[in-house]
Every structure is written in structure tokens, then in C-alpha cells.
Length: 154
Image (tube, rainbow, N blue to C red; front, side):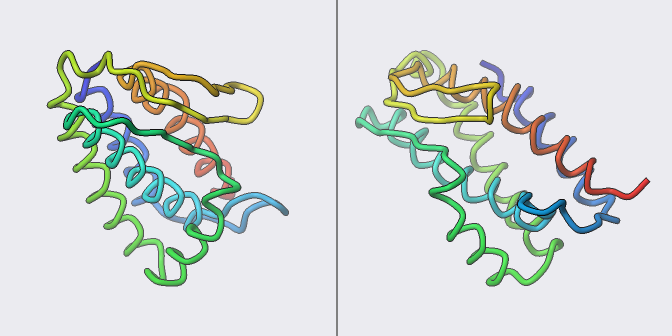
């Protein structure tokens, strides 16, 4: 597991956010602000899990968008715009990357994990925390990067 790879994935996503120009989402989909808020909320959960792993404490990680929807909507309302949400995501992602960089052998610590990315990924069992971070880097962040790109009118 590589903190640098995680940082690059966030840099690419935040570059897309900074480019702006997003249109409204298709019916039932998340808008750009909601995507960024979801990622920041998810980062907070991943930060908690990573801190628990580093402390040797048990933790369960749930990344189910239906659980986060009220929190996402509250964050959008609280931050009031894409720029402020991007600043929040920069802070949460930097903290997560820093913690991931400290994991070392603790990355093998099993964490009770529940996550789903549409039809692409469905995990509901203990996973080494480093694997969950890797899935976040290779699957979760690219999924939302693609969603942001689809929101930009051609």
C-alpha cells in the first residue's frame, strides 16, 4: 500500500473539482457538491479507522452511501459551495494520506469492513486495512472522478 498513490488519486480528483463547470446531475444522481461532501465524510470514517488500526483498537468500517446521504446533505448545506467543500476534502484527504503513510505493518490489521461500489465491488467481511485503502484508491476515488467528469457539459 502506497500513500503516494493515494495522494496522486486525490490530486487528480481535486484537479477535476478545481476545473469546475459542472452541470446538474441526472435525476437520482449526486451533484458535484454532494460527491465532494461524500468523499470528505468518507475520509472522516477512514481516518477514524486508520487511527484505530494505528492504536491497535478494533474498528468496523462502513462505506454505504445510503448511510451517508443525510450527512452529505448536511455538509453541502453547512459549507455552502463547491469551493468550501473542496477545501474540506483537501484537509481530510491530507490527514488520511499522512495516517496511511504511518501504517507500515499495521496495514495487515483486519478491520470488519462493509462497502459497496455499485455492482463493481461488494465487501462485507474483515479485510486487511491496507487492502481497504487500496480499494479506496483504485475503485472508490476513480468512480467519483468519473462521475464528476460526466457532470461537465460537452
